[in-house]
Length: 223
DNA sequence: GCGACAG
DNA sequence: ATCTTGTCGC
Image (cartoon, rainbow, N blue to C red; front, side, top):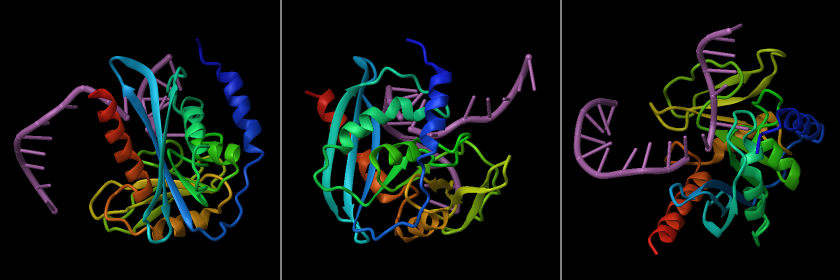
């Protein structure tokens, strides 16, 4: 089945109208999520998604959840949400502890139509989100200095507005790209990410969700 | 037309 | 994203 670019683009433009970049409230629970395939060889379309809920700011694990779903939509840059969101939502709705904010793999408003997967997910689930990507997708920026904590703004090449930040989370290691998803301001996005005391490049909630998936996948493939 | 292009 | 161990460098 082919991907309908026109419909997808239209859906993004309609959803974008519901985007709300307002100040973030108090956060007690934070969640990270991730998604991969169960077995790329045997069942190349079976995706597995995971969420990890942590206390904030202590970052102790409160809950793990996972779900499995058939994924048929291909990966197309700037349309990632259509591929990954059904599984993310299915998994998110299993959570007993609803987080006050979710960190999503991918961009928020740092996207050609200001509706990256983090913004898309935040609108659909009515939850504050931050997009955290490992690679740039859209926008201009300068390379931040090599020290942990250094950052630079990501600018929209057309409107010149700030869309997010390139943040160095570890000395001499590639930076990450963060931008507001929904129900959070641009500056809250930066300050919140700066409060996540992390030892690694990837923020702890995302890293734990990723590790959890690897464990689940090995379990399924070895029995 | 060409290159770039989250996961 | 995924196939994959050790290895080089800070």
